[in-house]
Image (cartoon, rainbow, N blue to C red):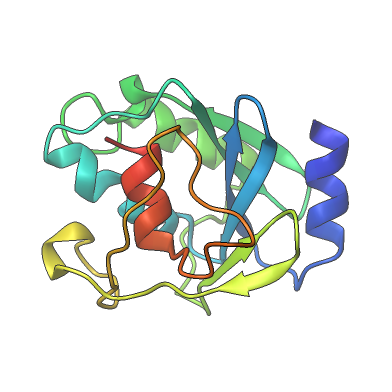
Length: 162
């Protein structure tokens, strides 16, 4: 699995950090790339603050792309509706200079290497994110396939964190 993640990353434009969405049966499905790791975490924190949890069908991994070091994200890192001190410490160990300005946010389908839209939705869904559209995801734990051309970051997040 780690080799597939590395191969996917090497084919993409280099961002400092990536958030990988890994399905338990399908493997690496989506990646969100950004230099500022706190921006990536903000996309997870917003729904978790509203009582949502990471689906048992999915794993989320933060990857520091400059050294290919990964941190598996678990609900405990967000237990009090904020990013835990423990997670911040792990990030600092991996990337001592992690507090960097925002860059371009890029959402990708890892199986096709196609860039996907962020979409638009309620501003409350993500605190500082651009508005995104909502699309319904399939009920089987999968977010979509080539037949569903309307996969967005918002629809993936609603499936992965519910």
